[in-house]
Image (cartoon, rainbow, N blue to C red; front, side):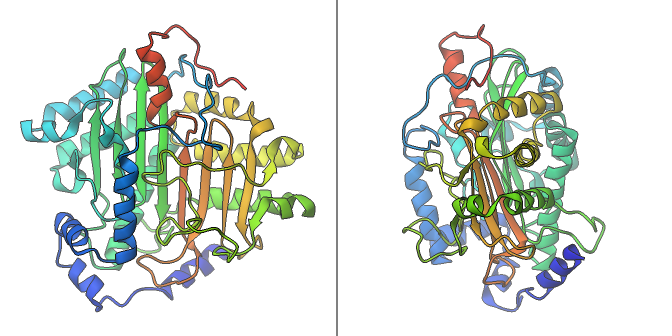
Length: 425
């Protein structure tokens, strides 16, 4: 019943496609659309954020922290049983299908700062690599094969679902050249190898995945996944839905806390609270702190300590984190989840907004080795001015230099390849 009510609510917020925003979008392809945005500066609030992102990108990578200082010796090297040979084979097959010009655009040095220029709006702000909706079926399918081989089966289904929902949104606003199932870029960093470090970025509207590989271990971080609306209710993919588990489990956890801990966890009562300091909310990220270009953000711990929760509440935290690790190959996911649980003595859960069954909300789980965020958003394409449950943003970061496999790359360069990879509390 609740899901159907949410669908009906989203239908109440379908936009007027006769206004200039949509009539212009319907005439443009992705490159024309991005050029008009970058050169024209509309909408001003998003253009201002884009200019701020460019300044942030000039900063050397440090990593997300809780206090501005990188905690050392958190990440080490050891096997995680990912199918690296199959991933390399799939990637080399793609390379064999590309033209010299496409290869030049796709191949970047593993330490290229371009790895950090992913973004989740529909604007193609950083056009590198190859774009799937501009490819013929063989290389497009080859990219999808890389994703399928690199991710868990459940993670691949989730990624495909996000892409299909993006195509559904493009149909809703009659702008399929801007938002479609394949409006995503793929770019390689380093050459595919079973023995040397390398990785790739796959990014576009509401789906951005950064994968780093070294031998048979992987880091999938940072990633961003969103949906507006978060369910397809017509057409060939009818019934497709994502992010409902993250929503359900987060609310269940908050509602299970005793009143005193609920008050401690709820750092702001309102989703756009007048007590928020400047910059705590912005029009694009809204309550998110660690989205695109926020590689060095300082995010102080807030809320309640997971280590002080009872066993049932800790199990809910574990289920939430397991859902956020869904993209990882199955064996690596189990290993990583066990490592995250070892940090519950320094893991915090915080909440913004109400926590009734129908309330929109934000939550974050944060420790030295993981940070996940969940946020209900107001409309971007749809017209709801207040956050609603049919527009969701989620993300994962690996703090203290772990994003993009940076911490592991440092160890590899130092020649510390024989150490075990263990997140040691």
